Image 1: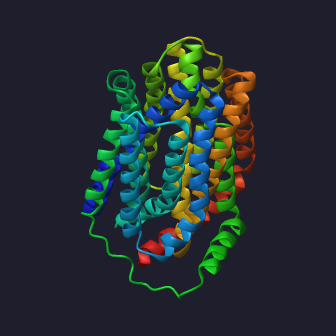
Image 2 (image 1 turned 120 degrees about the vertical axis):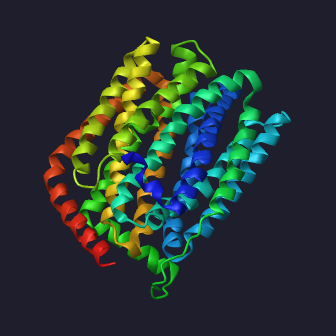
Length: 416
């Protein structure tokens, strides 16, 4: 099948298998953490604070990570980061099973997880480009990664929703710890040979400044990064208050919460498979606009709905829309960024994404405590719709610049 064509690379298969365990375990963990926090505190504000602290930590480290991804061996960086994540998960599981967990300890462990994730993400995203030998398969590989993540978004929350009432949050964390250690094992099987081309040695601060200057001065790259950051700030943080909808709007528990998160995953998987069928990056700019409109529609319907099946369909739509936006943006950035600056460009993309997500998570928790979660999510849908209008207005110029950069990248791949 076309969606699996990038798996012809042996190294990418090991990477894909490791990511499968990581994503599935992580989605179980995130549902369990969200439910545990709301069960302990009963506060949407503190629920938002945990997400804010985790994402702002990733934001702070992602700037450093971009330079490291361009300068050092990405494979080794990923191995170190995944090992720390596995140990962190094991500590969380142990404390929860021993009934020694509290809000402060949970917050500290999530901050540590965020710091390591911020260090790991730019290397992981840029690593895909190194593992796929045939660059014609790059769009497929990125979309396949997104499909994998969103399959886990379906299965992970569903499993967590079933397992939390049966075995508790602690054993969900233990499953995640075991999955994280398996990622290290899979990554150790990757036979990675870095590009032998040596770049002139520069000071860390100079490399960072060069990457920042390039991302800011290149108009089409700057536009994509800022657009995704804005969309994340006003829209994506709705995931933080899903436990509030499950408990307060539908009088449900962890099972309903799991259904909701899985519905987002269903839509996201459909979107990732759809984008993955594209042969190259041409046309992704128009798809991003379509995805933004779908995302706004889904948020608006979800904010008003009091019927579970309608809400689940709306969440499917939000997942579909947002994964088209994020997968399309990621693919465009990887395609149009020069190899020697790709890690830093992706780090700025991730940095602003994580910064917007952290601020949005805190704001949506705070505002939801004030005016209620439904009205807060509806306001977010209006913000996403306004961004769609701005994107549509800017699309002709964006298309002209990105197509020129795509053609230039294609010529470089042919020469190499």
